[in-house]
Structures are given as structure tokens and as C-alpha cells.
Length: 158
Image (cartoon, rainbow, N blue to C red; front, top):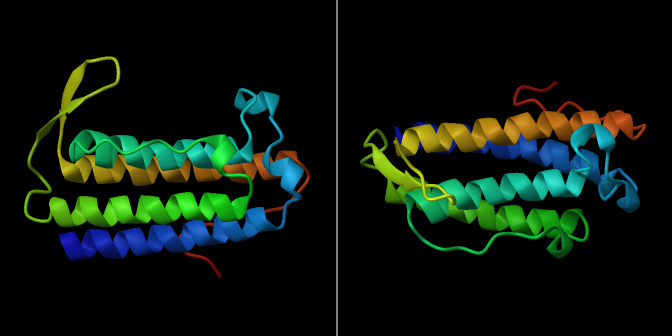
């Protein structure tokens, strides 16, 4: 299953690259424009939030490593976002290698509020990638609201 998840993550990387390339076409100030329809979040803040979701669930929770979270101000442009996601890719690779033989084994996960839940590495993998796609859709919608037509960012593209 490890190889399959690694292949699936490669598809995620392709869709992410398409999104990031689309964001490269936006004027820098629009990347930081808060949108009321998105709780005054910006495109950059959405992308940083997703990166931090990977860190929280895969590294800090599942592998019990305490990695620092990314900050909006550390991602001053799309190159900064790409650097953050380079770290995310390392987290994903480490997570998949670490859980190669136990992807279905339930683990205790402690949330920031101290509550606990049981989830398998496979469930966590599924959560972070679907969470990324949820926010990818929001970023596409945000760019439309800012007056730009984004490129196709689906896994299967023309």
C-alpha cells in the first residue's frame, strides 16, 4: 500500500503545482488580500493553513515530533509558500516511511485541546490530502472573486 499512497501523493503534487503556478500569475498584493466571504482569510493564509495541517496531523500528532508551524509572514510570496511545501513533502515522505508496515493500525492522537481520538495512518493520510483539496477549491474561488480565472487544478487535467 505504501507504493500506492506514494503514487497518489505524486498526483497531489501535480495538482498543487498547477495551483501554485496559477497563483504565480496573481499580483503579489492579491495573494494577501483578505476576503470577507472567506472569514477575512487570504490566499496565502489558506495555503499556510493547509501546510500546517500536514505538520499537525502527520508530524506532530502521528509521529509525535514537534515541528514548528509555518507563519503567514514567513511566506512573503509564492516562493516562500513553495519552500514551506518542500518541508511538507519531507514530512509526508517521513510519515509514509515511518508507517509503511502499519498503515491500518489505530493510534492515539492528542488534539491541541487535550482530547484524544483513535485514527490510523491511512485515515490521517486521507484527511490531509482531502483537506488540501478542500482549501485548493477555496483558493480557486478566492482568485475568481479577485477577478482572475484560474487554470484547471484537478488531478486529471487536459
